[in-house]
Image (cartoon, rainbow, N blue to C red; front, top):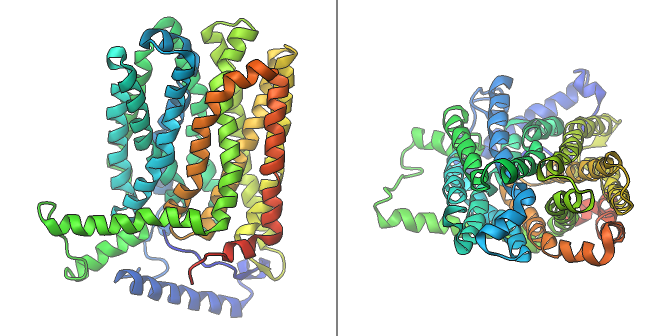
Length: 500
């Protein structure tokens, strides 16, 4: 990804072409940027309008890439939730207790937590496309093996390793969009890339409900693997490498083969170089997580958001089966409310984020900073506790399914709007977007693993009303204040631990 200039004066006069002094500054900065790329990678683009620069690719190519990677991420999100409606049947066939089966459900999230460290590191060495393809093949292999022989150990290991492979979709989608689209189009690009995958939380449980009643649950895994195999073949054909450092290293090698010598995988030097780069690039997300408080703040707000969201995914089907006495198939249809919430949050939210960004950027003397994303995040974090309380107390009092689903839709809209705002903030701030994304998402996926494990006991003891109220209060205390903190002190927090 090419780091974009930050904190530059912008305004309507600039866009209208009336501020010639500013245009001269922009030209100078563009030239300096090209020279910086040459110093860093040994080659640079021929001009700011070089057609080989991913920013200058046609909209058709960009949209095609976005559709392919979003279809790949769809399988990831479906894998997260597909077991929800079939948990009881899986527990019976595999010979596990419900609580241990819940761990099988959740352990996929541990793979999503730790896989990104390797995925991000490899993508910053070899580029996005190669790592995306290899990770998809890894996911297909282990996801297909999960149900074989109804073996508990294989199920547990397969879910974890499939999660590691599936983490490529979560880790690389946003950085690939940042490779292709400028900051002013960040919201639209993320909305485009998430249009298809955000149907996953609904389609996964619906598939699970259908499988548990009409076909064997084994086919849940094999259908998803077949779908991902098709997407991987399309990706091999349609995807183009978009990571600027990789593209410029290739260009530099073509101009001067001695600059980046290629060693054969059969030589010892190949593996010495590989592990040297891996050690550096795997360390980067860990260093960001440990030394950059801005990562820690964003990890907390998104971690709580995602943990509570996965908790709801894991219990939503049982709410309708046990409390409303619906069949597995009918109960799974309520997940459409979650899909509606995520779609509204992602699509309307993406355009709203760009609108807010443009309005703030166009103010006289405005200085563009990542904090331009915060006014979008503030109402988003408030939707989460509102939706939780609405959904919880409606279910507690057995009010009509419509009311419960509206509360769930409000909650999930807030969740995904927060996620979009966080991603845009990260992409604005960090040049190594994949590493920053991996560092931020580690906590969220660990909480996504842990929260569903205690979900049954939470609702057994407190009921849906007080259980969701407790979760809402937790989020109000720890998650809601963070956007306000970043609005007032964001630049100071970002400066801590930042390398010059």
